[in-house]
Image 1 (tube, rainbow, N blue to C red):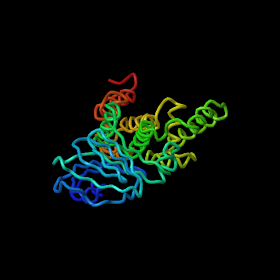
Image 2: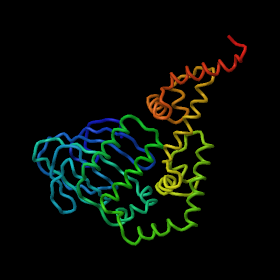
Image 3: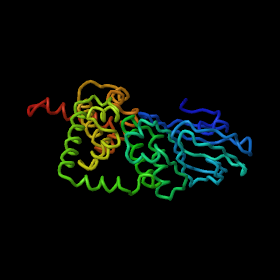
Image 4: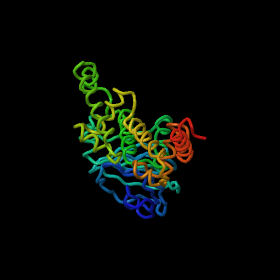
Length: 309
């Protein structure tokens, strides 16, 4: 799918739309769609072929999902599964817009909180203001530019919030068991080992490994690893990885060779130079060009020694 395009709506198949792909990290795809209303009547019934999450942004339309007719608007959140039957109509004459997430079954299979959606239940509900803001902030981050590792972890965290919000992962015996197990010393020790192993993998990587690859290295699912790492270290995997690669970038900036910042961003796994600049500002308070001047000047002074000018 192109980064941007105009054609049939990727979800509704028959509704013309403009869409923009925001990212596609490791078995997940996130994109935005604005429908172009040409026909106000019902589209043909289409069977969904993927696990999809549709998050309303603006406008309103009628939705027929698995035999149930209802209104969808900017507050609507819908989780559908392969085989769900969907058709839509636009009697209000407005082009609605929404964000869509498509998730591979293999990604969901590694998440205990997604079991109900994967096996039997979808969800059709609405978002409150807090969840809507989380959705819009997620989109804003993707539009600004994220590397694949951070994009994957952010989506996994958003999915966790969504499943809890929708009730698909709430309560029940599984949640009680997990809370009980988390207090066992042996489990805590295993979680510490898992977090330490992930730190080892990241510390000895060249920052090109994705979240799924790190998870495979330590023998865990991405979702489980992200959750355990946060619990054991108080930091997300992305934040820890950023601390490591900022230090690597600072080492490089202190070298005499004046390497292009775009090349540095690519070497250390940033989405682009702007992403590198944002992370450096957040971590140390200065953009890379200023840091290069500060660090090379300091290094030059040290090389001159006490007898220098």
